[in-house]
Amino acid sequence: MARVEGFPPVYDGNSRVLILGSFPSVKSRASGFYYGNPQNRFWRTVCGFFSEPVPGSPGEKRAFLLRRGIALWDVVESCEIVGSSDASIRNERVADLPALLNGSGIGTIFCNGTKAYSLLADKFPGLLPAARKLTSTSPANPRFSAEEWIAALREAGL
Image (cartoon, rainbow, N blue to C red; front, side):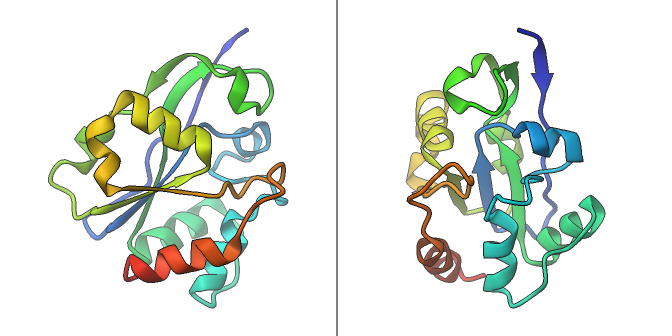
């Protein structure tokens, strides 16, 4: 298996909520930005919360996130992976989440799915008090709950 690189974090001094995924899918890696699979419900859900249309380009998506106080990253920066399967992630190099969070205004972490949450719990247990596991927005997840995401975004004060 070849080693695959993820994306750098999206954040700035106004970010208040960090949404953490596990690692970008094949379609996201091909599109060059987070949640690039058009079937993934991430963008429709988060943009819908703000009653905004889904931005088209990576630059527009980045601007949307920053304007809304949302930081975006993955727990895994690079790894060996088969396709988009979280279960196949091996030899991962994890993101330096404490460095990103230190001195930032981020007080809440939403984990996009079980794998992101379990990686966070394993690698950074001290961050768990600020974290909440949400249902994965992946098209492979039949138990996705937009209502859960909307309630979490509302509770975070976004």
